[in-house]
Amino acid sequence: MSEQIKLIASRIKDLREISEISIQTLANELKIPEETYRAYESGDTDIPVSFLYQIANKFKVELSAILTGDAPKLHTYQVVRKGKGTSVERREDYKYHNLANNFIGKKAEPFIVTVPAASDATEVHFNSHQGQEFNYVLEGTVQIIINGHELVLEEGDSVYFDSSASHGMKALNGKQAKFLAIILK
Image (cartoon, rainbow, N blue to C red; front, side, top):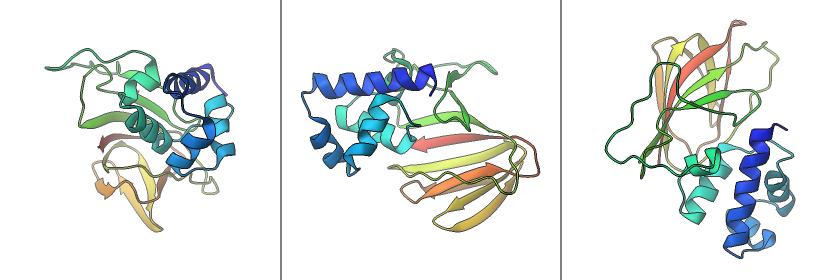
């Protein structure tokens, strides 16, 4: 796994240890198998955003603090120039750019997400997390599956959904896709 995932895993471990919670207790509270929790905390496997949200909520920290190691400082506004969002390697197959990583007390997490070109046989990876999500396709075509419902979204199309529903996507037509994702808490 990448160095960034190892750093995120280390921050999760620090939060748990500072709070004096055992791995078994925390895994039970988060309703995941202990082995899965251990894999996330060790940084040996991809860490789903749904888990990161659970950790942020459990320990009352900003998601961006877990992702970057820096606590947000701004509370009136934050400007992010074109192409300058904080790069977050969250999954090996997607690239995330956080557009509000330095804003305190966010009610939403905005990202530009780049999904690499995929073949028809590429497996869709699913996740779920608390809240709601809005995705607006900026470039390319994506297949999004929400609770088994398959949708095809093209440039300019959008979808708003309950993000506690299982969801995943992949780029279509052999080209990468980009979309604006706004995750509401």
